[in-house]
Image: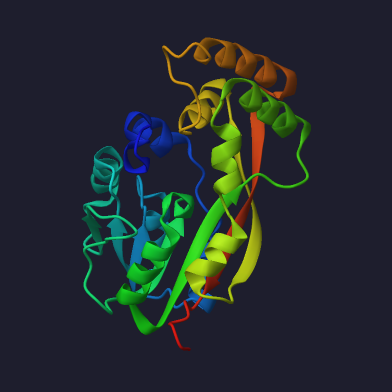
Length: 256
């Protein structure tokens, strides 16, 4: 079994090109409710190729990307390394290497399900200043599935053995509540991507559950994806909708 920190090693290019970003309304929430501001120090845990880090930098904050996967971290450094307010470190949610009480805001975009909750909570409390916030962001499929999404999901259930297990672990409310130590708030925003077939293929292959070339399910999955695209495209494109979930709050310290 591939370790979680290594699962994306073969998917870096597709992740960088085809994963969704986060809507401006979600970043505005971090500004108005979570202390994101010029001069704030933000730790982006599981920062990957820097999708969320890039948006945080636009706020004027100092951003530290904490990423254990060498390929993902290198992609973020190539894309964002010229910005003086960006720093990249080889670390994990459980052992970031960052100094105690050095962080105003801790964020994780589409990464929390890979964390060990209790260890990541201890590390977050060590890093955060007393008035610091945390925010866990997710781009998830909306509950009211479109016809395209229903067919896309059926395709994954047929060909991607790990799909149901991995997606079931994401945005797990009980785990996130344990991380925060109790109360947390949720804000939800619409989001979407528009793809031609190559983009849709890249989006699928950015996911760790998608069988890669050489796997017996890869070619049948690609044939099925082409049929799904043919069935739902308009003008050579399909719309891939999401709802962006932001769970946020001030992690409660023991005894508070």
